[in-house]
Length: 244
Image (cartoon, rainbow, N blue to C red; front, side, top):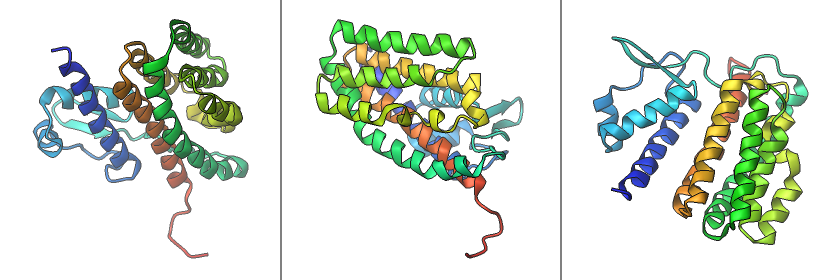
């Protein structure tokens, strides 16, 4: 039974990641209805429990909404609706995506190593960083530094200096919100609360010394950010398809 829960979590994460990608890429546009529960079960080959858990996560993230008697729909205010960005902010989005792409490669493995190697003191540092971020979000204060500190604490818990050096070299540039403070969603309490919850799942897996779960939770966290910024980039493209 104990092994069944991590397996269900991994299956739910795979479903969430694919549906997030469908939304970000426009295959499920704003206002579109999701397939029925039996349809999703057939598509993904998983249980009803896994599908319900995945849909609950997507609702909590503000990506979908359930309408009684009608079904489940993609929210009209999907991530990417950021119409008032300065040219400088718009120009920084490609670099933000490049940074996130690199971080997926580095930090998924650092999370797995941290789950195997972390000390009790390092585990405490990871938890304390996320607790500080949660407090700052609740106080409506900037939480970018605490967000970075959380990821740096995980790098330290690998006990591999190269992971630490990489995160130190990135600095606050690793945190997209620090580079794009004018995004409305960068100040969204709901979105930042979601980040804190995702961090908590990573910390839980590291505390439990479950490297595969830690790797999967970190990948889901970072790829969710990638999808968000891809959606913003698409929303900023000129309409009409003219050539330059």
